[in-house]
Amino acid sequence: MNLKELYQEIILEHGKNPRNLRKTENFNKDAKGNNPLCGDIVHVYLKLSEQRKVEDISFEGSGCAISMASASIMTDLIKGKSDNETKEIIEDFLGMIKENPELKSNILKEDDKTKLMCLSGVKQYPMRVKCATLSWHTLISAMENDGKEISTES
Amino acid sequence: MNIDTIKKEFPIFDKKIQNNDLVYLDSANSSQKPKVVIDRINEFYSKQFSNVGRSVHYLAVTATNLYENTRSSVQKYINAKDKNEIVFTKGATEALNLVANTLGQKYLEEGDEILLTELEHHSNYVPWHYLRKSKNIKINFAEINEDGDVPIENIEKKITPKTKIIAINHLSNVTGAILPIKEITELAHSKGIIVVVDGCQGGPHLKLDMQELDCDFYAISCHKMYGPTGLGILYGKKKWLEELPPYQGGGGMIKEVKKDRITYGDLPNKYEAGTMATAQVIAFDQSIKFLESIGIENIIKHEKELIEYGQEILRKNNSVKLIGNPKNKGGVLSFIIQGVHPHDIATILDEDGVAIRAGHHCCQILHDKLEIPASARASIGVYNIKSDFDQLNESINKCKKIFDLK
Ligand SMILES: Cc1ncc(COP(=O)(O)O)c(C=O)c1O
Image 1 (spheres, rainbow over the protein chains, first blue to last red):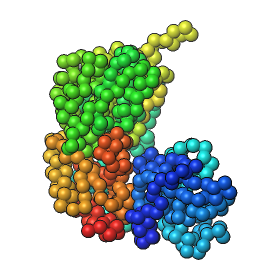
Image 2: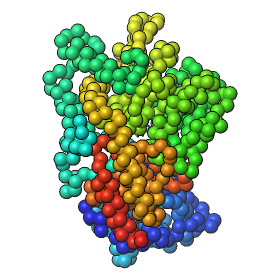
Image 3: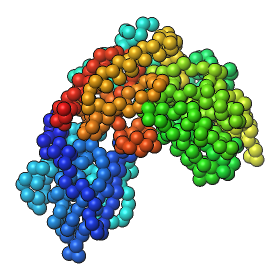
Image 4: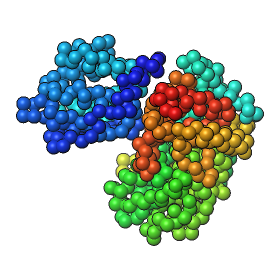
């Protein structure tokens, strides 16, 4: 295990100054997520245009450095993407956290990929994987907008 | 047994945990087990195993006697009047569910009130919450003060003519507040109110004397008392256990079963349906003997010194804020660090072999009240020593460094 790999500069910086930590005005999709075991909560807001492009994405919530950084990086990357691109990025990220050594999608720029890969340190900390994935699962729910609250424990 | 050298009775401390000496500060969650308890489980399964109470063969009789021996040991250890006031359960959680469920069935009516405190563990809230729907009862909460304590006045304030039950923590698993159960019981009984105590943290840290406390029910978690998991104890005054209906139905708890009627067994069988945690019960006798060999007075003294030392060290650490400063405090030191989430603290401490817990510790009501989503908790057992807190503090400083705090 390696703390330095888990708490990389970028993670600490995003954890401390999360981007898009606010509530999108006139959002049209949103979902809540929580991790009942540790008390982390996140609320993701989306403004999807008629062309199904993410015009704005933001989140509210509180949690550990990993979960805040993950939500912060996620919202940064997703802004401006189409819904199909978003789905592909989510799938790619979750696949990487679960098992893949690399990100595969070509949608992301190299430096965005580097940012996302910073979160790969959680792979060595199984108890912390949920911290990194909560906001992503919540984003899926917001996209589908089935209003289902995401819990890491169900 | 000398408490200063007690650590060597616990095999887990012989092991390196990820190349570190283990600094175990998570005993409020579950305590480590002394060798005598571990060995007893092995011995029972290797040489004496049989199910209890059913067959007449030699092994069954031996196992039944051993099982009942533990009941007698527990009765003595907690100074219950009668052996049949001791019911084995799968945990304190089941014990509390048993009480809430059966009191709910027999004793509560629509509009009745139950008084809890803001310090309660979910195990002493959720089972009562069920009665909100099924019985239409109301739940009130006695408030904590700024020290994370619940003074008896705050309880008295919330008692109404409708209050039927007070269900309270003996020792808070977050703030460490020790509640004056005896006084609370006196007050409650003077108004005809039943007292149910969540004794999970009282069990390992306090003197247990049921006749002195005079509460009606007391729930114990054996795995927090140097005993095996899968086992809890419900103490209940005999008149209640006799009067209340059974909880779970099944083998062992019946007297007579016919197609048109069933009668139930006497205490304690009435509440011990199905095959029980036999090996755990039998091994728990060793936990009691272990506690007796140290002496609860010595344990209390040792742990008081430790908690005071820990508080002193952490107070000097300027980023650390302790949660709760109750008059009588035992067992736990919860804290937060401004700018570092408890989960990050726990992960970083773990790298040094320091095991703590982070989260809301099943006390969401309390954390909401304190306006924090989570806290970090260092909790102690007989095996902890002062240098454990030195290591804790050192590892906290490492957190601060990683997170660039002063
Ligand atoms: C105060 C308190 N009550 C109840 C419980 C639940 O005990 P168990 O999990 O053994 O049923 C705990 C243990 O976490 C506790 O600390």
